[in-house]
Image 1: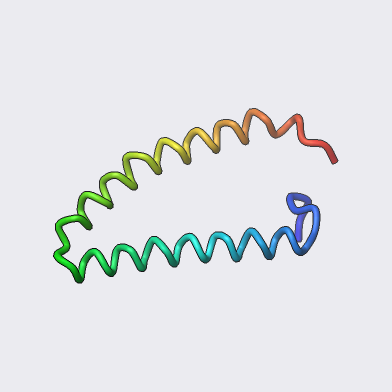
Image 2: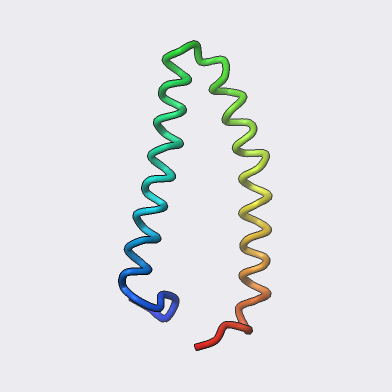
Length: 71
């Protein structure tokens, strides 16, 4: 399980949340594609424009704060 998770239930809830989030993204893209598809390209561009910088910020904060974690 590793030292990153305090409990097994925390790991399970995080995995369920990630799976539900990915499922919603795929379902929205599928429905937008079936109902015209023009919005799908806009959705993809916005997701990349917001998602990539947010991932970089999250990784940077995690890297800098790694020494401050309490055990």
